[in-house]
Image (cartoon, rainbow, N blue to C red; front, side):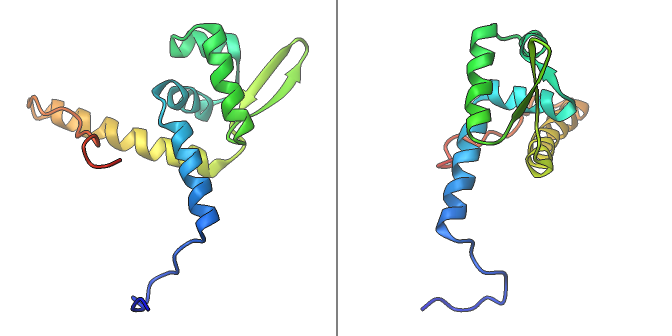
Length: 125
């Protein structure tokens, strides 16, 4: 039996699996860029493709995966689908992670060091 640390209980396995699936989808730099762009405001696929520098079919496929996972929603506006992030918690996660890594990179640059943004590779992640 594990000792009680006095902290919050561990989340149920189903919650951890759902979180891992969401993080798995966000592990793609293209999908993360799309989520970052949508965290700034809603957009259609054409403007998203221009913003993230992706081919229209590829961005459309990424949006479909994000939509199936419930991370992104869409509404019809005439002939266009307008995509948006409907979950403020996902927006917070994306903004915090990207913001922190950006700040680390800028701080390293400001110190005039050649230190790259610390990578998570090789950590089992």
